[in-house]
Image (tube, rainbow, N blue to C red; front, side, top):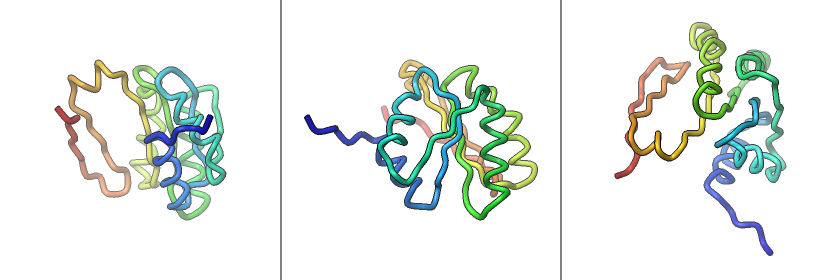
Length: 130
């Protein structure tokens, strides 16, 4: 049976297309599909850390060491919260790091999402479709 192409596969392929070679993070609930997509994408290698803060600093260090974007991923809840100190350093130092966090469906449908882009310091507000 052929493997069905998912939205997360398109996301990982787009990251590979813009030059992202590595995805740093900690595997967990709500994010398994991202690592599965990275496994099937020849252009992106997933590097797993033991803690989300470590993954955030790995993405920061990678982005500092070469031109381009560092990418870090964490699961919802405490996993995403553990990224904050590392992302704060990236923001303060203006290092381009993209943080991807997966949300549970109940939280997604009832809440606003905020993103703070590190290089530009612009806030983006997005509301899920009704």
